[in-house]
Length: 78
Image (cartoon, rainbow, N blue to C red; front, side, top):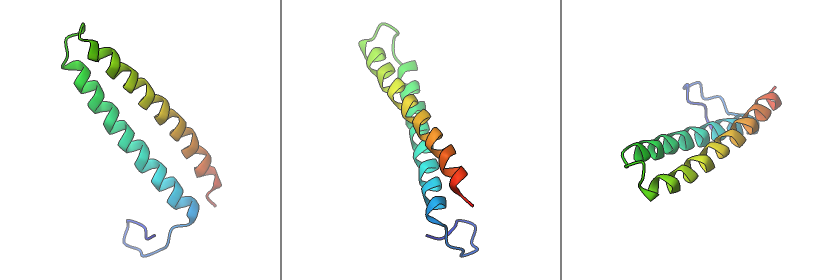
C-alpha cells in the first residue's frame, strides 16, 4: 500500500492497520451523524426515535472500541 502524500513510500502493516481503523471510525461517525439527523427530524413521540437511539448507542460504543484500538495501534508504530 502506498501513502497518500505522493512519496511512494510503502506503509508498514501497523500503519496500514492504523489508517484502516481511522477510516472505519470516520465511516461510523458519519453514520452516527446521519442517525442523529434522522432522529431530529422525527416527532419525539415517534417509536422510531427509540430504535434510532439504540442504533446511535451501538455506533457510539463501536467508535469508542475502535478509538481505543487505534491508540494501541499507534503505540506499535516505530
